[in-house]
Image 1 (tube, rainbow, N blue to C red):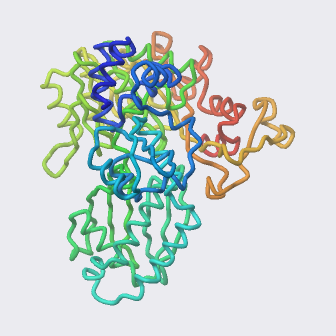
Image 2: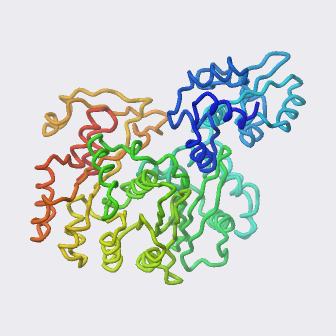
Image 3: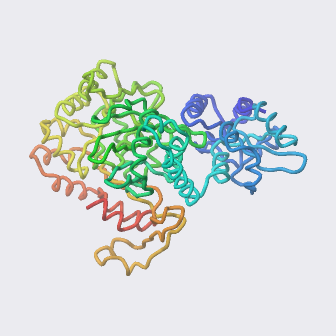
Length: 549
């Protein structure tokens, strides 16, 4: 039974309707998941409903791996590369048969290979792709300590090679070293890998949950060949060492492709390389998952229901503004809407959205791109960032002429966005008439769930004991690399700009006065939202204080 027939069954049973089919196709294209992933992730039906129906009523071989007790030795019966390539994993075996969970059971090549290799009859079962990948990760991923040891061995092997950097960059030790470094960074949930030359050695640092951690040191002799390898992958000039270069390449890890943005600059001790790992799939970014409070979520959804106006997302660099903008895009995306963006860079790919990359070398700036988009009859426009007066003026004019405009602004609070626009030269009456909502935000590190410990409230600093009823901290473990934190969440404040702010805007009120009006009418500040998440044991008091100072 193949996935297409399962879709037919689910339609017949009323689990899927015709309106869900285009969403299913988009989901399959964007995330690579199958119909079961779609149903469970979209909460259309539970696995407890769908799987028994398929298995018992229609005799479809289907398995829910999330409830199976799987021997990892069984999962490793087939080679790692084969399993990840075909998204399949053995989960039950005896001397005669082996049951293999597959993303798509219509795979005669894999079935024939497995049967011949294992000398047993293969029984294919349909399963969620996400569940298969979880089992494969558990079965094949090395521990952090094993990965560190392997990388140290590769450093030693690469150091023993001699030759010019270009030749060494093609040798297997250097190739493997870079591949293992990137793979380890991805498994460590790093967003960036920095290769930083010093006088005596090269420091390798991972940015994890917003903070840099030194992970390895390379002999200085390996700097040139490793950077040359990065240039080869990124199609950059190997012989150019005096000017900055930017590029990108794609890396495959556990069957998933990861886009990597590369920046190389010359420094006193040699080239410094920064690799940014981009999750180009925006399908999982929704307003429900980025950490908004229920009040801010309701407020924001009401604000984007406007057909025109300007909605701003504010915060310093690295505060998650782009993620929030894409969550808004996913909320607004509809078939009958012409939705266009101008971005630098395009960090996520969104099906059905016309995305334009800024390119100053050919005159395609934010302002020029925005002008061109306005000639394309858009309904909704996203401007990645308002950086100057010209872009601000065009965005405001677009909001005045019947367009909903989303953008970001570098300010420390939501209230400061109003004064920033006025300082950029936008007339106060235009600010008052076009602004619909402003979101201010920060990112805080989550407490590691594997080593979280509740702490006594009396141990908190005295000023915070009245506002934080309970708190937790992470003791540090292998899962979080000893940091006590794993993952990040957002803390937010939202201002709905309505008539209550008109007089303050027109009189050039400062950010403090505007914030006072907002809090008087019920706005919870970023720090207040952070305290709520401390009490819910999602983050720590130290994190909230650090990010909101």
